Amino acid sequence: MDNLTFRHSILLVEGLKVTPQSSQPVFIVLLLAYVFAVVSNIGLIVLISTEKNLHDPMHFLFCNLPVNDIIGTTVIMPRLLQDILKEASERYISYVECVIQAYFVHVFTAACHYVLMIGLSVRLSHCRYKIENPFCDNASLFKLSCENVIINNIFGIIYTVIALSLSAVSIFITYVKIATVCITSKNKALNSKAIKTCSTHLAVYLIMFISGAVFIFLHRFPEYSDSRKLASIMFHIVPPGLNPLAYGLQTKEIRQKIVKLWCRKNRIL
Image 1 (tube, one colour):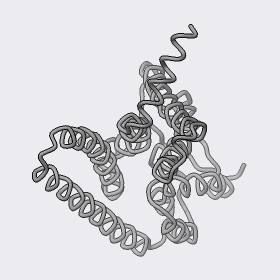
Image 2: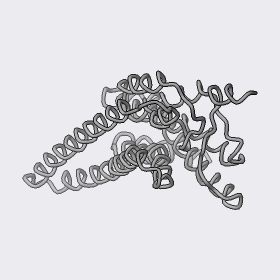
Image 3: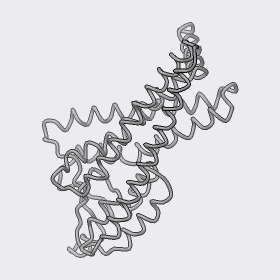
């Protein structure tokens, strides 16, 4: 393979910088986290799909979240796990595979506006071949180019600031309203349930919000690449693992079904 073909068709993924001694422990931890996230989300989908009492709009809406979580974690984790066990110089990926991975990474992150962002990156010629990230995303793609990428940077930063700001404001307004109802209500049981549920949801949201903002903004600061990589992996593995607990077990109907199935299983055993 000549150098020109290599540069334009095959890319080298930087991946995680782990020593040979720590590669297996890191692999095991990430594998367990991935398996837990996938199994718990699939379990939530199966439970909602098979239980007729859960066939209502609210619980069907809950099905969208685990599907998105499965896509978000599966699009990066299998390849990341594979790369951990490889030498840093052997972590190759084709340019087409990289673009596809970047698209699904951003489908998980937000929505269809990223079709435009990926398009802005793909239109650029690329003179570099190294993906400075554990996986492919839009920022990693336009970093391959030696052209002027100011349009990509400006569009990415502006949209990210707007999206994160709107998300934070909407969450803030929602929780202010919930707090107001709790303060004015004299129902202690209702207030306790609201606080318990909202605190769990807020914790998951903050993890996703902070890790997402960190890995997006730190793409512009190469000296913090290790922190960016950690944040990007947390964004794709922690919320998908916690969401079934926050949105599943905290929902009374789902929790009762799980307890019922567990008790039935124990009686059979």
